[in-house]
Image (cartoon, rainbow, N blue to C red; front, top):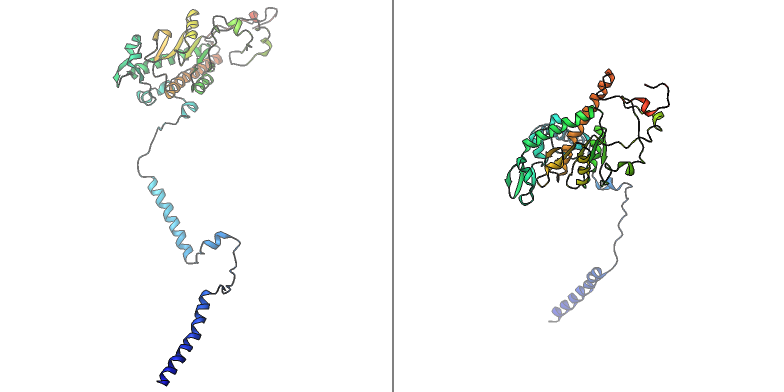
Length: 330
């Protein structure tokens, strides 16, 4: 009994001396120092692993295979041609020879207004009704557009003044571009009433320019034409006739021919050469303005060609009328 108790007592003392050392190790706040890792100057190099010399040719081969696969697959599938780009109608507008039913259909020229807003005078231009909306016959639109293009070309060939008018929002660029190609004039803001009937009072302060048959300016005659009456346009192209009814009324008073886009709610008798089409679609307006501008451009080229041969398509203005005091004039 004595020996057993002694062993038990000594064993407890032995484990008791060892237990606090384990506890102090777990509860201690001291940490071992770790050697500092040198940081690289380039963080990308530190993150990306360096490829070995054996992996470099393998990566190059994979890149070449990927490039060859892309080139081979790009030739497969369908190719989209004649895709619509809004800027193309301004940079390179279509000409009279480009008029097709597909072009007019894609530009939404066939969409009219509601049947409750139609004008009975447009019954010959209407193809039918769909969902309460009148559908314009594109065959009639193409025929009338070609006729209007012929008129613009002939007026430009004879040296006439062509005025393009479009006062709706979004028509400004199309009107300016059409006037540039046809070498005409443009109005993209509100039409001032009386600019034709009372043009001497409204436009009398504007300057006049004298040019020869080759469109070269003659500045020495500028002072002599200051007292000349205000010129009137020989042809007016109106892209929105409903808002410019005063303009069309003034043109009728002076027998000035007019061309206009007539929708199903407009009166076709307002203009001389109507073009039945959708006047609310900017794409439709841009197509029609582009066709007429190309026709005017062709007429201007024909006029210059005839001027080089000496056969002017118009009556030559005598210099005696501009300079009555001059002795020699041609």
